[in-house]
Image 1 (cartoon, one colour):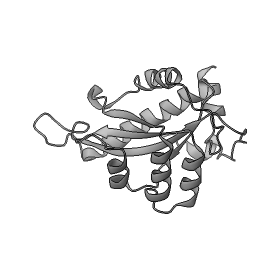
Image 2 (cartoon, one colour):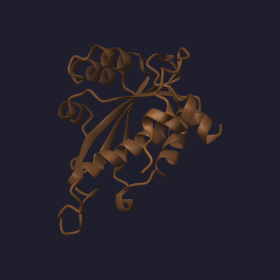
Image 3 (spheres, rainbow, N blue to C red):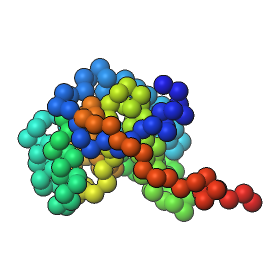
Image 4 (tube, rainbow, N blue to C red):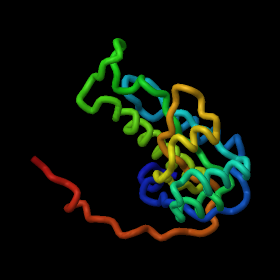
Length: 180
């Protein structure tokens, strides 16, 4: 698939077939996502793949702040990616001070780039994804025994799409650009 076609046709998928994505395919997706740019090449993003149904149900029922859409999406997904980031590297100087006024918010910027690259690579390989942002970070970290020094950035429900989704209406280019 050409890059622009991939970007224009990728959709957020919330209904999945029961078939899990193979580990070989997941590795191919992560192999592409690992090429995402990061602050001073710190490469802080990690991918924790949740496949255990009991753990998926715990996350759906106890870790998404009772947000019904996330509960349903996670319950229907054969796998969930807990995107985490290594703390205190991105946005920092070697002495521990912040490099810019954005302080440590570069972590989320890098995690966002990596998450979108993950989703685009998945789409290219026929795998559906949706990035979920409403969750209790501490409960998820505890549920999956996230390594110390990492924190949760996002959740990505993943699986083979059970249906095709139409593109939602988008703003026109003229509304989004400003030339100075």
